[in-house]
Image (cartoon, rainbow, N blue to C red; front, side, top):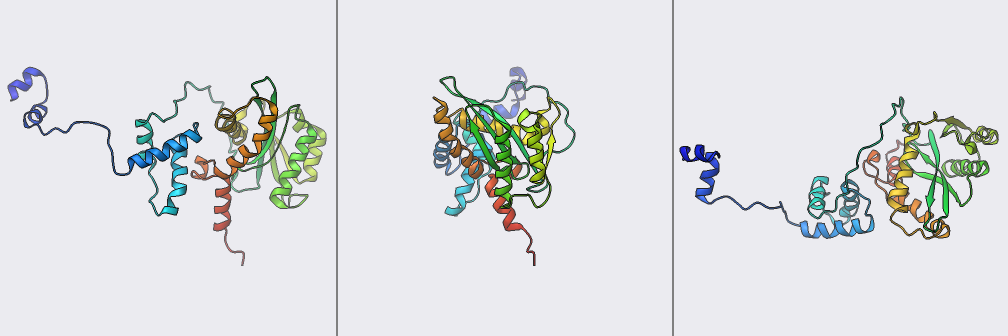
Length: 280
């Protein structure tokens, strides 16, 4: 056997297995319940085609406790999605990342709010412009404004007031809250800065050409365009404006975040309130 193996240039153990005929045919690994799980995965990927295996795992695990099933391991979901060719296409080369010092994410809610804007093009050539404010700790989009024209300073001031009213049920924040934005004219206007002071908001402006300085806002812009605008019909501005409330509500209620341990912003806020220490 040794001489034969050396002559053929193969391992002796391989020849022994072939002689015995005990080698099992190779194929995809399968375990019980895979077929049902694949069907559930396909249902989710059909509804949310931009979700990867981690977010699909989070959505599947949300429904399993109700049926008494054990939570799924993301590696199993990855295996099944890979076998079914349901994984997302890998990103190509990315732009060089500018060095950024500091931490954008706040240590608690209502310490730093970040605001930014984006454009959603429509198929007929119209453009919807959206401005929003997001908490950099729990990632909830607290308020937003949309228009087919330009974002004005008055809209940003309305946005500021809506955030304060939503989070504090008052006309002024009980403690200073950072308001992080870029150097756009609507944010940097004197009236806007004075209004921020009246609301107890501390206006902070990011350096020029440094999107990493407000990475939470940039991440939401990417999410809204990728997971909602790109996969929904956008024939005209009226259709987009009609869909925007449901998109942002779905983001707040259902969109899993890796930074929130695959929970949605509202789930994370609820978990925070449940784990808060008793004040007595």
